[in-house]
Amino acid sequence: MNVLAVCLGNICRSPLAEGILAAKVKEANLDWHVDSAGTSGWHDGEKADKRSIAVAKERGVDIEYQRSRKFIVQDFDRFDLILVMDSSNYQNVINLARNESDREKVKILLNYTYPGQNRAVPDPYYEGGFGHVYDLIDTACTKIIELHA
Ligand code: 4NP
Image (cartoon, rainbow, N blue to C red):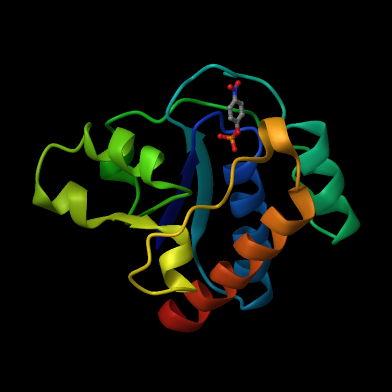
């Protein structure tokens, strides 16, 4: 399975989701490919936010290697599951979908923890709260592994 995590900037939340899910995939010996992207492209080529890198490092997950990139329509062909962090990301990605098959791939991440509630992973870029964001993503990724493994 190919999984893509998506947020706005691809520097705070989705890099954590990529790193956390990739670590769990490795631990579970699954043959999955995990990547991340941002809908905006504002931080193309940049490393993840220092605060995301630090919180991941504290928990033993390395995300230093990651570079921000923009979500593109071809990602619908390359990925089976597209995990968005909030309803704004959802709308931005759905707006690029070409058909029902594309639309079905897009899931709000926290619906794995809180089914049907469409809860958002809060954007920590301005407000902070990276530890809380890490925990929210971590719990949802555990559910994803349980569901699909
Ligand atoms: P992210 O957070 O979507 O979790 O990567 C943001 C990063 C950058 C900006 C907004 C949100 N920005 O406005 O540059």
